[in-house]
Length: 296
Image 1 (tube, helix red, strand yellow):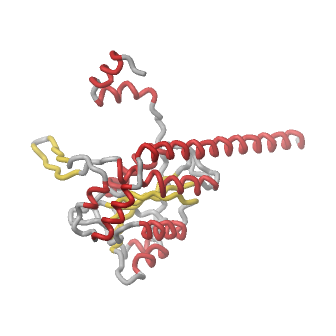
Image 2: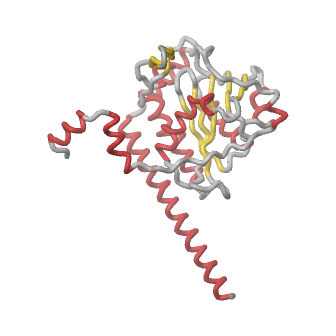
Image 3: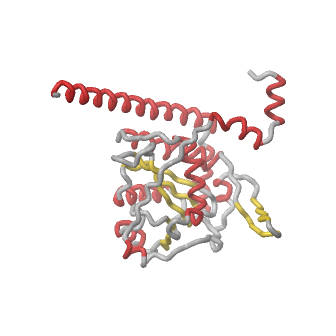
């Protein structure tokens, strides 16, 4: 329990003051980039997109991947695939092992089955997990092809929407640990598909940039009122009544406090597995070193 004085000080503190006080306790680590340029010839067939001013309904997605490699890109480990709808902010995450084109396509197929609206446009970076013939055929070989675009190489701000979600939906959840036990894929994916997806899309509000104007040497930004992706979808006239009713039933079946508790329980299990894997790897390394010394 907080005393009255401490509670008053916390409520009176500004956001910048809290950031300064918490600074020494925050992790200073930074994630490594795992982007490897894709098929150069195929790049010429995929147009570059730098803005989304023409988006007026759900279905336009930005996509990217996050490497759960710790501080080394060596070996194999878990990756997160993140898709963010530009109009609503609706975000889907999936865990994959080593981000092969076939695995990315399989996760995209699974995400599409659970969405209540169609993917009409797909924008990614120039990584090999996206710029390949498997995904190109996946989006084009259908009755209504998906409009595929890519950002400019080395311009991360072209994908600002999904980059932001990778921080709030991935790094703030899992941090910068290395997940090199393949069993973690199913556990993380289960958390993403169920509790984490529901908590973020139905109960945690976000703001959206409405306009940006320059006044002299300053840039003024105007943001929307904070709401969750769910009411943005419900307010869209591009979504069918059947899809809205499906979302409404799903929303009414959730309890945010229960979701939070289940998230914490699954996170404890995931990090327990990480610790066990690390101890097992350390024991194997020690045995190997002992054998080398004996042989010498």
